[in-house]
Image (cartoon, helix red, strand yellow):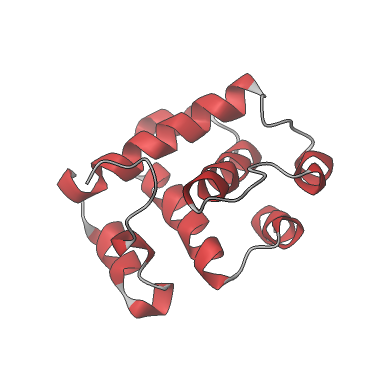
Length: 120
């Protein structure tokens, strides 16, 4: 799977993986994300999760190599911004199943995290 390969290259721990998966699953609820290729969605979710978790390098050289995208790739940046907006809106969204799922300890409670730069 593309996600597993990139998450491994990114050095994600379980919480980091769950945060990226949460971002991607929120994207499944919005028809606007259909314009993005699945590989781009994975890359954007990992870029966003790196940023939100305060990674010193939000897109390490290993990610450039494996994803074949730079952190300045305009399409990936636009996708990450869309995911960030969905993450910001999640507490007020009408569909709450994905958010409730990721509030559980089984998923490290990533939906409950106070993440840098997100409105509460």
